[in-house]
Amino acid sequence: MREREFCDGCRNGVRKTPEALRAWLSEWNIRPEPLAHQRAILDHVARYIGRYDGAVLGGSPGGNQVEVLMVRATKERPFHALVTSGVSRHAMDPPAGAPPGRPRIEFVLLLPPEWRIGAELSRSPKWTWPFRLLIELGRTIHRERWFVWCRHTYEVGDGPLVEGTSFRSLLFHHSCLLDPGFNDLELPDGEEIHFLSLWPLRPDELAFGRRSGPDRLLERLVGAGVTDVLDPDRPSIFRFGAGPARSSGAFPPAS
Image: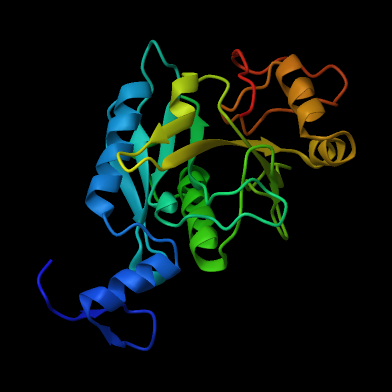
């Protein structure tokens, strides 16, 4: 790195030497090698899901990009996959009592094959809200140093998660349809990135999870045939006569 000054863009335009910039990156738990970091994620996605067909970019505090990689459905894998890249540049600060270490995460959201992505992606909120949701989750982690882990839930404020449905919350867990090897990526320096899938929940499902715990909720979801492929028309698992979701999968244990 040449000896020149940098402007971090976040602290009133204060100019920083390379040494000061590295100290600032360390303070915020930001990885200073974005290209190598992104390449590792791209290779990981290609290995376990497929080659990505494009990306939607979103900014974040400190000028850190959060992008959403798009992997199209295939005959063998009948669902699209959206995977974030950039959320893991920030290591999360665990709460008191949690195991030592500062984990890094990325998110994945699986969509049905008829969902418009890539060149067919329109500006209609009907098709774009999953991208906005993933980018906003990444921004929240960067901005608020938010800690998210497997089995955690996230409840939206006012209004539904998805317009026209009663989904109002998310369960973060591993995918039940992707290869379990996708869940964790070990980087060359020994650090790991954990990939959490988004499972949209209805209000009564979230309430049950809070009463009975996330493991019991997952049992009920999978027992009802629900997977982490988004189905905006899916009825609640507690609705009388609700049938199984469009596909099923083997659910791996949480690590």
